[in-house]
Length: 165
Image (cartoon, rainbow, N blue to C red):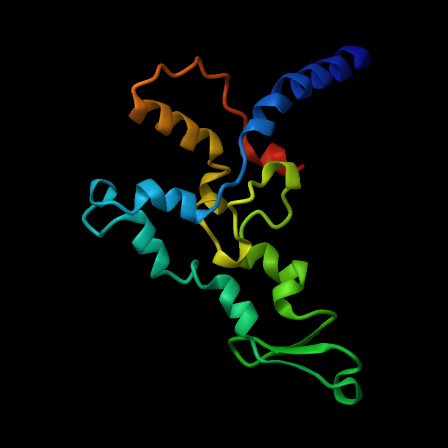
């Protein structure tokens, strides 16, 4: 029984991993190529410009612009960061470099580098793919559709969270 469970898990991972390897985080600028057009616009505007005006777009800048100081006598070698309500924290690195901050203020920070395309700029903040998952497969399919070329049969979609494990 135990052997069959382990074998089943191994088969699932072996089959799903190639699908994951093809789907990478591409970044908001790649998304904007199609999702900033008049055709993409809904009643509130197009998705890219709505995102651009949101706090998500500026999330990383918040970290980069935070008032930080390095005063080893007062801060014992830590970077002082003042949060929105005035609470102060001492961080071992500037907030824009601290994983506990960037994981929420950016996109794909903890993703395996094999799942991140060179086009992703993490300094763009919380981007489309933070919620929608890696977009390279979507871009590929939409590009084929627009070119009129046949779309190859799709393998079953794999939850993008598996790529982060």
